Image (cartoon, rainbow, N blue to C red; front, side, top):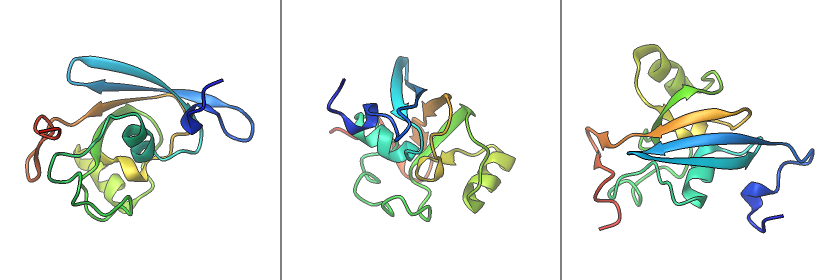
Length: 122
């Protein structure tokens, strides 16, 4: 068994698969149920942030809208921002998505206000 806490599973030992698309790359992550999607992405080096927002964000409190991702399947939105985003087709906040089932995530490449993810590691 891995030493990575994200791979350990919850108290019941149950994990789900989160499939992440980053540009043309696909990553299948085994994730313990109940984890926050933002935390899982950051731990795996798949940041939802741009270079600027990697440092300037709300730390997962759901108020800055910088950690947006596209979900093609996953839990129904329960945060006010995510309900509006879902309704109008905007990215959902990864900090407000609890991993409770298999899901597919696409990292957003160009965040109109915050810039592109491409320059994040520069």
